[in-house]
Amino acid sequence: MSKKLDLDNIKKKEPAWLKEFKEFINRGSVMDLAVGIIIGGAFTSIVNSLVNDVVMPVVSMIIGGFDFTGLKLVIPAYVEGIEPATINYGNFLQATVNFLIIALVIFFMVRTLNNMKKKSAPAPVEDKAAAKAEDSQTEVLKEIRDLLKKDAKKK
Image (tube, rainbow, N blue to C red; front, top):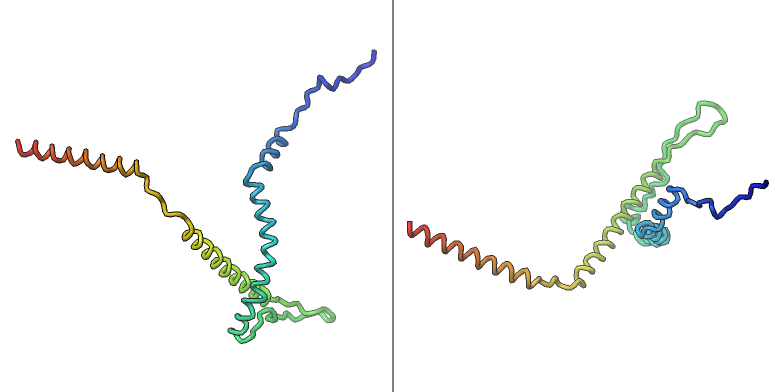
């Protein structure tokens, strides 16, 4: 008697984690994030060009052409034949300055875009039904006030 494997009777069940992973990947926010990262990578070259080719020459002119990247602290070697160690804090300062300039430029770009959106957005339309309901509530409250005044005069 040979045992034959009946594949149709074996339930093919995918693991729960695989199902969760598929749901996670297919969410819109994950896809939006992926697109944002790709566009951000492409945008990086534009921002770097703006900083290095447009902004930094002006900053360099203002601070007298000073370049931070040459600043370093040399730690002498105490063993002969070994190069002295250097702490290149100028590179760190230059990266910090670049970051601050990029952040400032991005801030002004986003601020400008937001201002353009505000100007082009249609003026909010008042909800006429809500205004009418508020007016009717005000009228009812005035009537109640008047009735209370009349009642107080009678006493």
